[in-house]
Image (cartoon, rainbow, N blue to C red; front, side, top):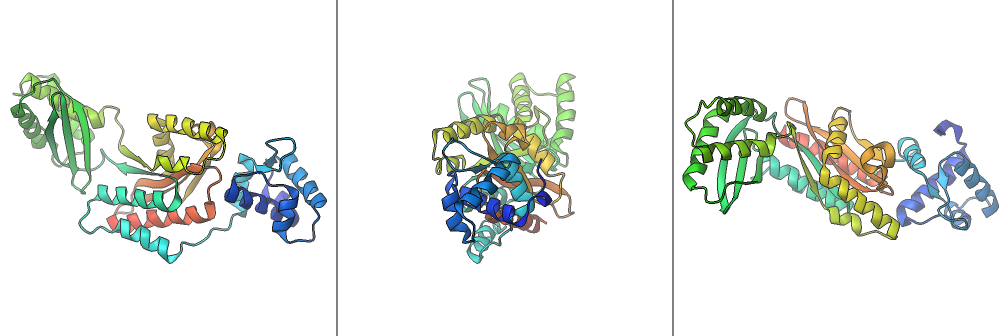
Length: 346
């Protein structure tokens, strides 16, 4: 792959303007348009020669024979990691993020939810947040009947995280069974992580070391399984997927977004990607085939970890959008939000 130092000053400048134009319009850039943007003493013919060299280096491609050029994924990665000049948040953007991340009368879960909404609105992309789950110390679990066969399970942790899930239960289960199941769990899970509580409680149920009736036992098992069934230690929130459809210009782009939606529905690959991201330091950027999740959709992820009061990284927050993201604006936005969350929950 072409390295940054292999490009001369003129090639870098031409390439930078092509990427900037692509981010702005999403359209191929021709030599005449580029000549006007550059304001340099380069003729369209000279610019075409540079563009041909950049194409031969794998940094540009022509979507159609007579069209201008677009950056390849490799070109975007080179640009983002070597040429991009990171911008700064303006005061209005900072205030917007700070407003959503304030801890006043909000628990940890609310802060993460509101921070994700802020990123969605400001970036016009989909917002994601990876929150700690089973490593948190549990405080309370409650079962609330919604309708025949459907029960809401409420889980509260010591650090203020509140999560709700709906489980399927036998029709006609009496309120007393829900109360009994809740009391049984709360007597055993307080002060433990979800993983620890699950191991103890399922062991008791398997050995018939409880006084629970059959229905209450069923509720307990389903209540634990809705969080701990796959053994994952994190919770994923994705918001603002509709933002990805607002700037679609071509049928091909719409098809790629649909592929991304299908991938997000499974969540497994995104969880693996975010788990890897929180092991790194600072903002991480994944473009297209950097990861299997975006290989077909051609999208990008900008994500940054956040930490708890002891400095331990506990989650990550970021945005997913098209490959032509405004990286110089969104990178500091994600970075600032992650740091603000760390400060708020620290």
